[in-house]
Image 1 (cartoon, rainbow, N blue to C red):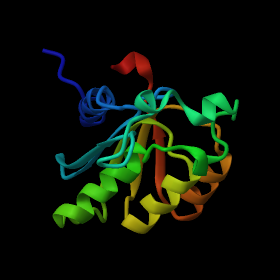
Image 2: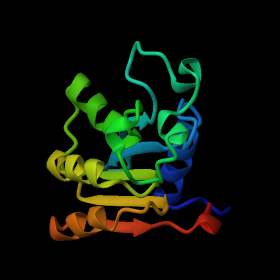
Image 3: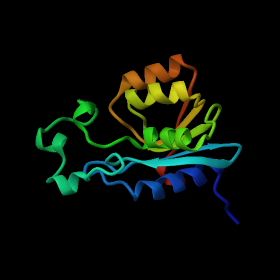
Image 4: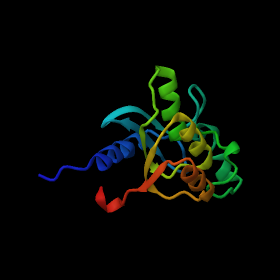
Length: 152
């Protein structure tokens, strides 16, 4: 029997969470776990109760031809990592010392939030064009691990 490692297991769940995304540009899923237990999940999409981009006629950043990793303030979506943190806040779940599993490397905005939430380790699949995020995570002592796709 070939059981997945804990990192592989939680990343597969993050991939499933990503399937709920309403973003037209990139589907991202996140799982926050500690002691091999899921604490929260999140995916990227419109804030609760607001129309999704598809219902608004498309992606604003795509229409303006904004490259990936730039002008986050023009995006309607709340990032998967942000939604996972928000779920913890809404339901009183302590996230300090946990690991984030994300289908994409966090951006600088999410990196700052993850640092302040006390996340100590981030496991991700796909790269994101944000070297400043990597710099801040390293300075904060947050371990950043890229999981190889072929392991899944």
